[in-house]
Length: 448
Image (cartoon, rainbow, N blue to C red; front, side):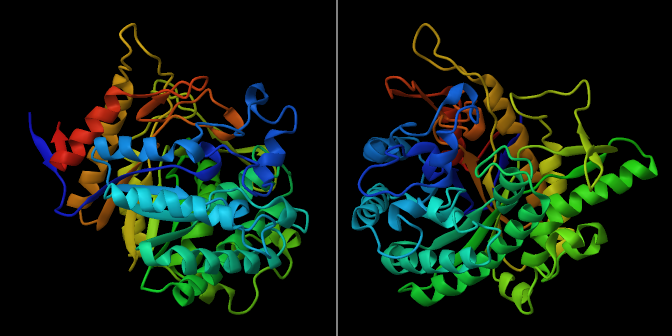
């Protein structure tokens, strides 16, 4: 057996998001978000489950932080709920909302855990949605104001602020596929939302740097999928290129090149009009950290199933699948080396999410033997190591997620955590994967 070791100072961490873990959906002055509205609409979520309580991190954060420290976890990426801080998205600040995140950040620091704060993980204030949401350009400016409040209040204890988590999902899964809040099916709305979210990143970057009391690195996290044609046919290859443009390049190009692939497709022009204003792309290209969230690849064939772009995703036979997608570790290496080759980013590069949903359960002795997750982690972290060895300057790996939690439209059926949560009793149990990951952090590597 041989051991792989990561560069000195490599960062190991875990991630979560406010709506998925906090609960306390209407406590202490918190306003209503689009996810609060969405989950309370019958038929939107599996079993009509909600994040009203979730894993009750709002009340159990001290216990959770202590467990992180016990597992050698020294870097925690979490999001703040916009409506906890600004209940209507703009206007008066909610002191109790600020106080909660004060307590959380101070508790993390007490345990020598560095907080990586993300401003937005899909829970847009409902009042802003009522005014048009992300398809409305004004929402980008409201987001910058929110960023300014957060940076001014918490910036003295932060080194990193991420503006957005997965803008593509917020834009397209929420506005085109309709599977996430706000649940609309409108390509034009999705394209406008995508651009305005990126614009808000640029505006927020300015606000953070102006409002913080000390220098802060500003980042964004993107869900990226290497795209493969289903066959070598010209139609399938062209379909794969279209998907790559609308799934990957739509966020990478503006952030890292100051260009956009949207204007390459004449067919979408009627949907967007004069969406991109002079100066927008220059403002968007403002980045100290690029976070990469990787779960799987996309295998694409030409098809009329998805209108306008005429593509269909296929699931190759004979491969391993999780409860949500194909398991394809080599795609992570392909993605990282592609980013380095095509963009040579000047910003820092991190894996900010990677994980697998496994139907974990407690064995008779109270132990969770999730060997499949450990195998997944070994295979993917190995690909991270390969990429670093081949010249990709990757600085960090964050596992998704620390604990089992609410998995959006899929409710509580998909477990991603290193810690098992009994959703009825809220009892936490460290899984075998959690112990394994703690040892990886301690050794800064693992035996192959």
